[in-house]
Image (cartoon, rainbow, N blue to C red):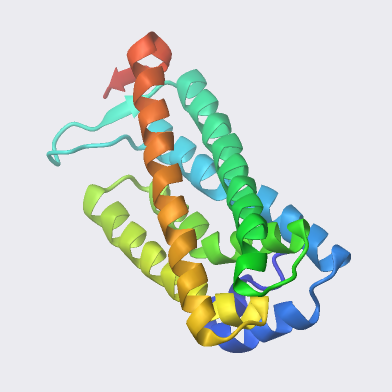
Length: 201
């Protein structure tokens, strides 16, 4: 498990080639296991940070979240991240033949998992809630995931760079739509009374 995480952070080109060379049902199942564990990082980190440290937008008194509320939100975020990644894998598989690739569905989900790895790791910033720290971590995570996507698409899918660029851009567009949809769903759920229970410190 998590065999490729360090490689994707330190030498991504070589790691993509290694992932491609070993892409098969066993490797793809390993990618699914990685998804389950990586998707836990933001939820667990946010649970610890929001329950034991609390958020403060002004730097004054932090506002904490009740343990039950934080647990529900952590589980919901874990499930949402898994569902979002699987959906992206489905989209990538649906689009791949348009660009001349021939990967199976599990390979495409595995690809989505490894592209999103930096975003999962940004969840560690939730251990100590800080808006500037979180914003910096998210920007770095988005930047590295974008780099992995544009670098890895032609390498993993084994297609020319020009097609890989167009394919990666299509993936970005769908990911943005998915992200906005998830944010809207979150706002609607909060409006219906399923939001967090805050506890002033």
